[in-house]
Length: 385
Ligand SMILES: Cc1ncc(COP(=O)(O)O)c(C=O)c1O
Image (cartoon, rainbow, N blue to C red; front, side, top):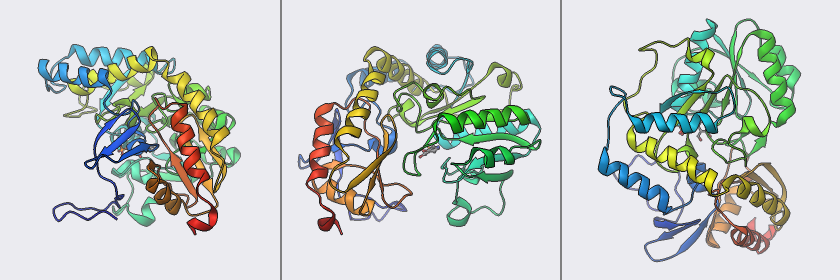
């Protein structure tokens, strides 16, 4: 383990590698050691490192206007909202910018409860939605482990993620919304699939509840389509996103239907930093780059290649979609991650102790996939026990 720092509250275990720069899909430390990044800083580094268009957009905006809040109108904010609404699934036309995934979910839940006048949220077992009060209340297992508040801000029922009838039975006249990640990320890339999501939509329609898709991890191209809602052809009332949206610049968004937006009036939502000019310049550039550089097609191609080439060494199966993939290993994921890092490949773990998570930059190529497969092949089960 890397040394802890006396001034930091290091409540997060850190890896024995300290990057000081990055280029493309590679990170590099001060000594020049290069590590191939298949984790993307928790799914954030969508365009990899040192991307010239991102750096240029940020620098130009920084020189022009570093910050202004929502106290004033900003052309760059309008443009980012136009671009994001056009990139988002049809019918999700209105955008509220925030700073993070948890903040996006916190607002989405509040909007759903206020708009429906109901007090119950149905969430899924094994879900992760963030660390703020409402977002963590709908996160599976948080209350037992780290929630910390004496009560939750709403009534919550957790439904099994593999039984759509059990989910439907929980969605009733008190239910404001169902919240779900199309592919559960933290859980280890568990793909809910089109059938389950379609059933969730139908259950919401039958009960007059809203469907919130948490696309903080799955959104902005990660699944090879703009959003999971596109991949599975499911209609959301509210969609939240963050992580890859800023490709490393902190930002998030709540995207909703015109109907839902019309329930909101001045003062209902607020944020100091959300929708700031730097974030908005980056958001516009991220979406432009994904579209102009064929990034979605690349995600689909690299996803297939990983499935073809990486079920080797200690890996017995691959779950997930696009470039949110779970490698199910015969050995503990933490051991496998450490052994891969020794071979200069960075991957993540997940809530499943046997699943290693891949969340690489969306711009990886076939050579990177080959390097991962080679590193996996070198590892046999015995050397990892
Ligand atoms: C699906 C999902 N929702 C919400 C969050 C919380 O996002 P943030 O850490 O930006 O608050 C995460 C973070 O991992 C996530 O994966």
